[in-house]
Length: 117
Image 1 (tube, helix red, strand yellow):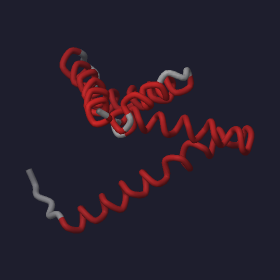
Image 2: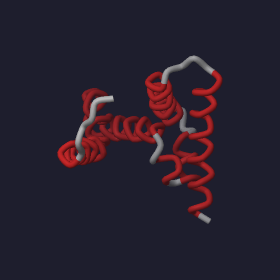
Image 3: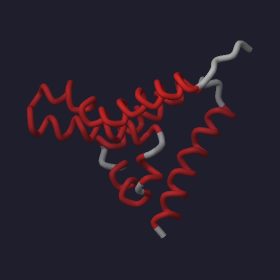
Image 4: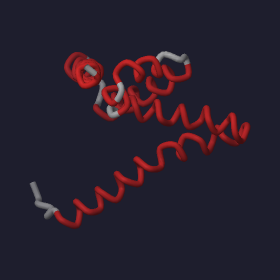
């Protein structure tokens, strides 16, 4: 059942993004920023943790989950370090995913061959 809930949650997030692409003039970059910002805002309001509890990876893997990760990192760092946690917590919490993306991107850049269009 956990897989079904993750599929439904992730699917709803993707459908919302597709609707924004199809029915608005928002660029994909703006939609990404919107979803990250919504992840942070909904986490601050206590809504996104409930979505994560229900949907698991379906809520944490999409780009809105990145915002959730940033916000959770800030919340934890503020509890531990005070005000300076506002500036360090988000990046510390997301550093593993960011590092993995850089390393994997570098490996694929080495393995792939670029072509002119």
